[in-house]
Length: 113
Length: 109
Image 1 (cartoon, rainbow over the protein chains, first blue to last red):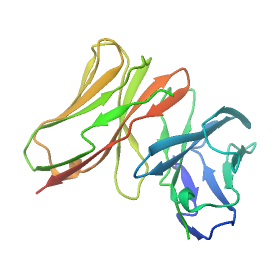
Image 2 (cartoon, each protein chain N blue to C red):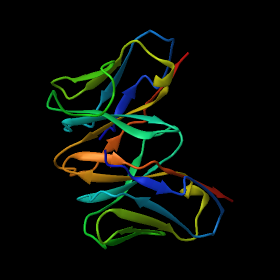
Image 3 (cartoon, rainbow over the protein chains, first blue to last red):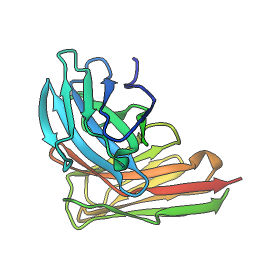
Image 4 (cartoon, helix red, strand yellow):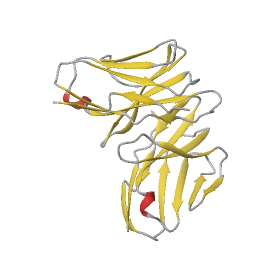
């Protein structure tokens, strides 16, 4: 079974631009969560989608948004990028059969210049 | 916000030494997990503990869940260079995961 796939792996943007990151979960997994990881703040929860519906949301500004498609693939979008948005963005998928186990992708490293 | 604090934040030890990493919170969790993350990769689940006081062993790693289900510890015996990585604890309530601040471990050969 293929793991969680995130694209792209690396991204360089400038302030004010917007960016879209993609996540393909493990086949059969319907839940996709997004996290932001920085050295100073650790792993911060962004949002979780289940069956195309946002189920939970973290404390991030409205510039951060996401969606999930009918095939469970998910995208997150960040508009009007700020220097502080530079981080590793991780996606994790899970299923009812996997219990509370999260399967993480390798992440997208975003650098905002 | 349910905060999990890990200590120490950084740890550098020689191969063969023992170490303990702590994960503390003022909140009660239904279960707690430990993950290890290697550079350039996402975290990988090591263990889930569910019952207060529970102890689980995974080869040289021993995990304990506090009696009150608010804290946990990870003990590594005879550390090896392959144990190097970022160790993250995660408290779970309902379907919400709350990650700790992380402990970066370096094992020197």
